Amino acid sequence: MERAAHEAGTWKATTPRAAYAPEPSLPRRLARILSLDDFEDAARRHLPRPLFGYISGAAEDNRSREDNRSAFDEYRFLTRVLVDVSRRSQSVSLFGKTYASPFGIAPVGISALSAYRGDIVLAEAGQQANIPAIMSGTSLIPMEEVAETAPGTWFQAYLPADESRIDGLIYRVRSAGFETLVLTVDIPVWANRENNIRAGFSTPLRPSLRLAWDGLVRPRWLFGTLARTLLASGMPHFENSFATRGAPIVSRTAIRDTTGREHLNWAHIARIRKLWQGPMVLKGILHPEDARKARDLGADGIIVSNHGGRQLDGAVSALRVLPRVLETVGDYPVMLDGGIRRGTDVLKALALGARAVFLGRPFMYAAAAAGPQGVQRAIRLLRDEVDRNMAMLGINRLEELDSGFLIRRE
Ligand code: FNR
Image: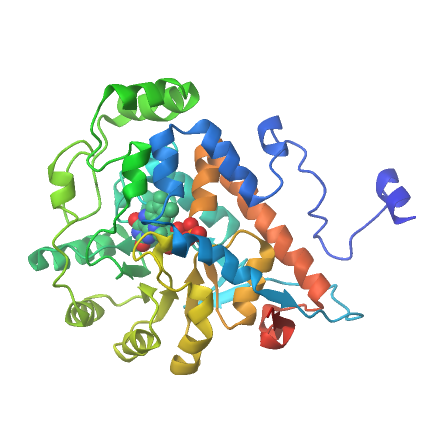
């Protein structure tokens, strides 16, 4: 009966959430994308091999990247039934702001090379959907442009190795208008990303015949992203590593600008805490004692993360260590990333106590394969999954979730 009513156009959802109907104006390319993983295939077909390899790859044997996925699979849900779930809301509060969904866009480096004006595409999509989007500091569009186009975007910084340049960067981020600062702290040295070498990707980018061929066989990317970027703004530079513009992506100094960070330590974070008045988040924490240090030092929150498996191969997955972190820091904003691909993953992390989660690769693939519409579609897919799954779990609000909804598989 419901189906007949639906077809006759008389069926009404109890809430304005009749979101599962196909979107009317969806281009054919996107209509076939039904889950976040579908974007990965679309991006593989769209991007030159080295660039796709840069995004998808991790460190050494990809052990942490793979475990980020399997960690979620170790939990099963214990559902509640016959609960009136007609008033569902997936909104969350973070640092005094209310966001429409409990997930956000993780920072992804050089995104403007994978998608035309990628940093802006991601930031704007986040703003429009009212979810947090974190702009990477390893980016090719000046932060000021992103802050102006998409106010509310968070900025992620890597601390410059040369300490005298730290304050300048922090002042710049503040003057650009960012309110929330994310400091990524898990890169004392670059990981062994041998996968990048195998795929033909390097920093700096070294022009070669093979690279040219890899580009030529992906004409939509070649013209739609690379040529368009070169025509509009010339050779991309690392724009946001310091207070001033950094090196071009093909320059040898690009690598020098991102190395030599071994000496950075908690004292540098304490200093930045004094300089930065807004919310400050540390990303890349795994050890519960580091979480405690972050909290005691005055960070407003942490993102538990193994960097998508891209740093220490074999580093524990955020989801696995989350309960221990929460035992140590108690009621403190702990967020998480790594391996989230479904609404069920989001809800598992939240049931274990995360306040919110972030996704890196899926949104980057969506931006690369289908631009702004792609990211909007990705957000909508995930939002619909969260919503539908909340109903099947028997909850109206995310605060109702706890570990009682989960069973760990033996
Ligand atoms: C990243 N990540 C990242 N993190 C960060 O703090 N600054 C950065 O510039 C980047 N750059 C970056 C590039 C690429 C291509 C990827 C895939 C990842 C890590 C990212 O923010 C996040 O921690 C992971 O991507 C989360 O894992 P998933 O969602 O990709 O599985």
